[in-house]
Image 1: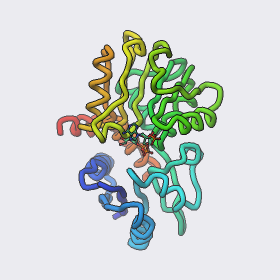
Image 2 (image 1 turned 45 degrees about the horizontal axis):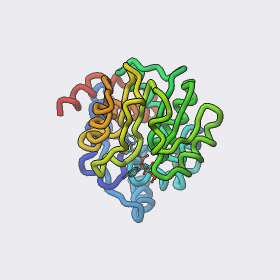
Image 3 (image 1 turned 45 degrees about the vertical axis):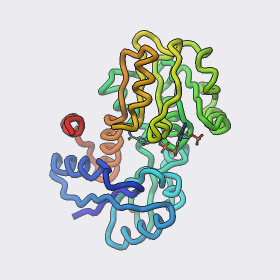
Length: 269
Ligand code: NAP
């Protein structure tokens, strides 16, 4: 039976083992997918032990996505650009690193929220690993404008510069002056501390979508801020979680699972 895992800290409440077990059952693929607790100190040793035990692939989550980069013998283009790895694939004696976050986000936006990013104005909050993956995915999808705001402005500026003409860094205290957006994405970890950037009402078009990459309690502060700003459509990132998992599953097993039933089951709790 193929061995797979998700590494992170904290990891006990990860939904990934449940998601991958459901995908495997759906497609008749026997797999053993476990959650392995690892902080930054012990990560490399735990991944090496996992490889010795026959591990074929792994997901990597907070706080390890940048550490995973340096474990890899080579990287996909999307992982290299994002500067973060959420998917490890065993190839020979080493790891190939990939990033499925951007593709998972775009697919959730398109399939579950009917949002096509091409030609749309997008405001992205955050400049960490997930924000970088999202930013390149929006640029590739043809977003007409990508404004990036982050607590540490220089990281937003560096990301906007890496993307090029379609992107610009904006200050968090200037959001009111930016005009209206079709999509506002929160890719910060602020929600884990129960906070969110304030969203001025002037940001949102009548049918604008507000989207937090986090889910559960961590998404609440941003979703509340979105509703206060008049958003009629606001979503957490549970759909992205399922879609990035399906993308990783496809990389490992060569076939993409259906996600609707798994998503519905997770929503029910
Ligand atoms: P990361 O690389 O650590 O980046 C964290 C980002 O959040 C940075 O932009 C950081 O700003 C900002 N931030 C952290 N604490 C903040 C606070 N108290 N106030 C304002 N900004 C704050 O993390 P990541 O991997 O990008 O993950 C970001 C979020 O996306 C997490 O909540 C994660 O759970 C979620 N996520 C969800 C999925 C999914 O599948 N649904 C996938 C990936 C990530 P500075 O640059 O100033 O430090």
